[in-house]
Length: 324
Image (cartoon, rainbow, N blue to C red):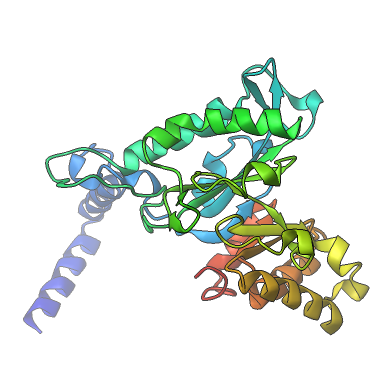
């Protein structure tokens, strides 16, 4: 009671002297904004502090004003880059050839930024007694970032070049690896080849640090019968191709059953499911489809509008589902 009376008295005094009250508020705002630059309000791994990871794939991420970083700032645990190989060594990032430039490379837009973030998340200091291998999220250091690399040019040549380009991440131990075809070690970045990535450059390789985006809709076919989590941690397919049109903008029970079956088939092999080509308009239809997909247990929710999907999770509609 004495403390309470003291606080009331202090508040009353400040309110009675506007100049003092304003000064107190200004000082508090300075602390909150850290305008005095005090080191005590920062720490080595705070680059992604406060960002909660969500099971979202940043679709067509390279279209964003700031690729990779924008998705990271929203908490997306999956990103993608389309790559084109020219002159044996040059990777260009873009959806089609007309969007390519000399400066927009796989290295400049993705590899180097990933290295920079992971360097921040794994600092060296007298307080670190053993090496760390933290992921990109300060709030969930064990969460891997799925990195889909969509091969646009000739598969064998381009994917071989991609494997080579991953060396800076590889040499630092940042890539999820498979050893002897039976031991999986999850690391900060899990690379998944898609597009023209040849399955025969992934599946038969017993020791590797890259994986394959299997066709979710075709996992029951004989040619994909051997695919499990060690080959394809995530399998994807076109939403419209397997579901068809939505009558009245609603996913019917029959369509929902199709989705559930595909997700279950993948899940039985330890594979997560992702559906691309989901509707983005009208908003009510988009949100309804998101709700269905998360309810049915997709591993990654494909999204173009990251503000919208981030708000969707923030509102708590789907927390506790998917990967969480």
